[in-house]
Amino acid sequence: MSEGERPVRRVCQMTRLAPGKREEYLELHAAVWPAVEQRIREAGLENYTIFVRDDLLIGYYEYRGEDLDAALRFIGEDPETQRWWTFTDPCQVDPEPSSPGGPWRDMTEAWHLSPEG
Image (cartoon, rainbow, N blue to C red; front, side):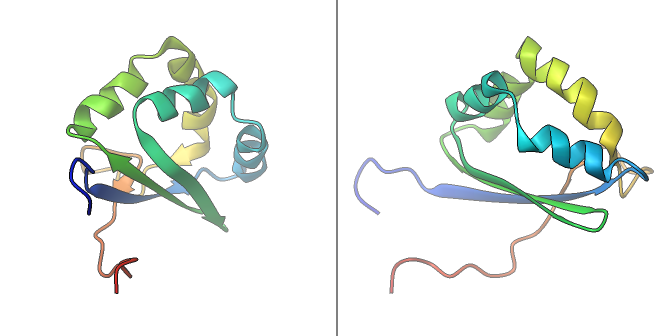
């Protein structure tokens, strides 16, 4: 890593699609609102990707910065993102409803192939 370059924090999360909401969720994400995408970029999140298989959603992003919690708050404070969530949130089901912090649940990184040799 060169001097001044910040380490990348990789974040992977999972959640479930609500019954009957798969197509709606996919349609929403076929055309994510530009203001929502811009806010994510401004917060410093990169390579944000959501994968889907049946009712399983896997989200992945990378963050280069000093304070991921502050970056996520920055995203959440945006009125357009809050409005976006009124459409996407009903499509998701917390896989661990008895535990605080859902519906997206952090996954633990088990291995990563580093670009360095």
